[in-house]
Length: 346
Image (tube, rainbow, N blue to C red; front, side, top):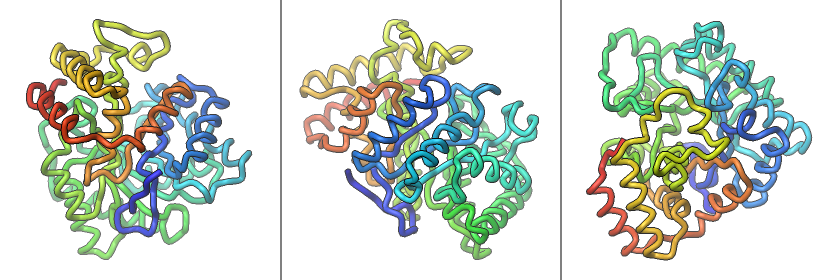
């Protein structure tokens, strides 16, 4: 396993991070425990979760993933071996705090206590803001997102949030803080306000990044490197699409797309063509397409950790093994050719 510093902290996190959001819906408790056992054995010391998980989210599965992690900690007595990240939900989910969830003092305080109880721990290593109050271009919203907010109100909220997180750090309930599904402006503003007011610093930003979704480049990538606020890449296989399992309208039983309601915004003609092209690149070079896609994420200088997820142990083993794959110049040239043909396929 390889390790990188989490922002400007003293924590060395594994480049492969264990994503957990299927536990409690697509995976049961025993399967979640098995995945954590194997990941830890392979040197994965960084686990990521959220109060709203399992995904796709429902009222019945809210908090279930954290509970599964909590029972594992209680059984294994190994909390000190894991760097644990979780998140407070932003607005929009009617079943979280009676529909009043947002990123502010009251919600953060309530959410932290709930997560600590479910996780059966007395501290969280990295506490993240799941998405901004003002909306986000993530979650396939990039085609229609338009920033509309009062800057003064947003900045006042940012200061309130940082002061609240500072209290929690001083209480020992969280160690470090990070963002998720944020913009460049939002990330930089948090960093500026932290420095100006001597408040805790955001150490990472967890945004979507994969061969099919490279919105993080190049501007955000420059920010991540220059400000030492690296990317925790979510959905590095584009919700599994890069495996090819959803091509030609396929919907494998029990897969995430079969559980999601509504139209899949990723299921476009261009995205399907891009997947086929990347699969051809993998075949040409004798590679597993999923490992190739993950290895591409692993190698990016702005990436701190790559959040992989799996519903089977076979998938988990293959995904973790991507850390041992180095992509040569020929592979990278072919990847770049596909990217130029399909730069923003969904």
